[in-house]
Length: 254
Image 1 (tube, rainbow, N blue to C red):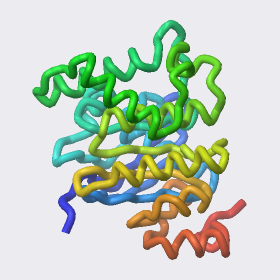
Image 2: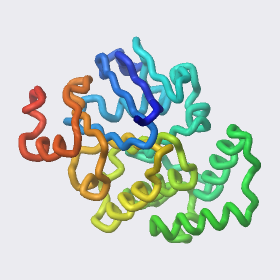
Image 3: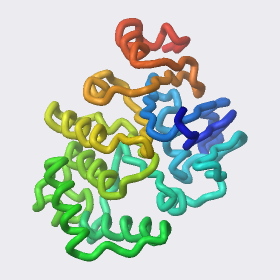
Image 4: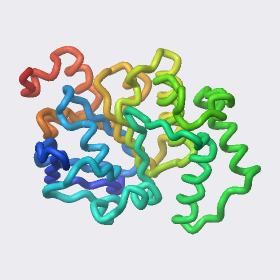
């Protein structure tokens, strides 16, 4: 049985600015080495859930708890969560003028290694891993010489997010609609990268609307989140039911 990596209990969350309640008593457990998928209609709370786990400050936790590696995640800053091994691939990555992707990744890798008590990678060690991962996800070196995400297409931004994940090797990777806007080749590249990283110590929580990414990544567990709560959990067969019957069969009202 997989050891528990993430435990969410009775989580209630609202938007900080408007006080609108989004998540309503969410319960979820993710074990080490497991791949979980969250599916559901727009506005159901999928992106809110992964953003709260990552520590984004647009939301407030009204009640409930989140533990990561048995530690209280809600007491940690967003940077502390990242250094502890949580990675969020953004749905809409921001542009950072003046910062090149390799500089951003090198700083993040160094910070994580420092937290773990490891020495910084030498330039040669970093370059070897960097070059190998660029080839793996099929990103051109010219792209990495621009400012981070500046002038990147939607697909290039998503590939770059996956590249960062590969470099950081997180314990828990949160992928928020990474498949949106990707062509067939990019979708396969993302799927291949995730599958290559799957092991007994690394877990994934993937938010998606569609089955197409799951043709490349077979999850261990699938959850349907409707109106702020997980209303159904199961295996890959649940994806097929969603494709056939839609979300109305799970209580969603348009």
